[in-house]
Each structure stands twice: as structure tokens, then as C-alpha cells.
Image (tube, rainbow, N blue to C red; front, side):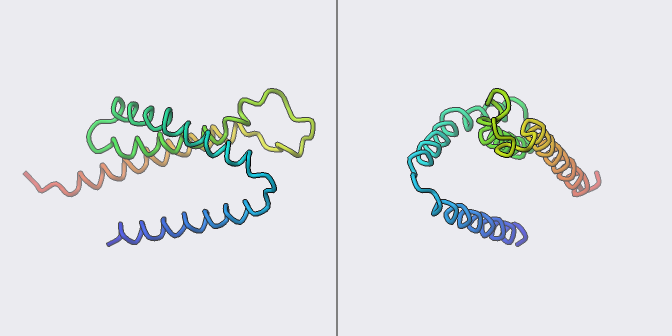
Length: 136
């Protein structure tokens, strides 16, 4: 029951965020760059990100940890794909208000957060499984 509620809440949040994205697209005058970016994102995901995540997940994780590790790798890969243009941009922009944040540091903080949440989730999950075992 809880898993069903979680799926519905997560799905509703995703639909709401897609609505925000669609609203923001209404302000774009020329959709060519957006379509090129979306096509590149699909190619990056299908040709590189998904196979790499599956391979690393297969090599790294054993047993019940495989799913969460693959999920964490997928999130880390998506964060990297989104941050890549800013991370690869050489030097600082002419206008300091264009990219006012330290994107490399924030990207590393996000990757660290993903790793910590995954490790915590696996620890809680492993602890819960240890409690369910009947006494021998």
C-alpha cells in the first residue's frame, strides 16, 4: 500500500514539474536550440548513460544492492549530463551574473549527496532485512 502511495505522489510531482517545464517553453521564441538539446540528451542517455549505468551496476553491486546502486548511478549520470556544458566551459563568462554560482562545487556536492542517500538507504534496508530473519 505504501509503495503505491509513494508511486502516485512521485508521479504527481513529476507531472507538476513537466507542467512547469512546458510553461517555461512558451517563453522560447526559437525552439531549434531546444530540440537540438533534447535530441542530444536522448542520444547521450541511450547510447552512453544507460549502458554505462547497467554495466557498472552489474560489476559493482551484488544481490539486493544492484537496484539502488544503478538508480544512484543513473541520477549521478543525469546530473553530470545537465552540468556538463557549464563544467566544460573554459574561463569565466564576460557577465558575472550569467553563471553566478560555483557549479563544479555544487555538482560535487550533489554527487556526494546522491552517494550518501544511497548508502544510507542500503544500510537501512540491510538492517531491516536482518531484523526479519526468524531465530535459528
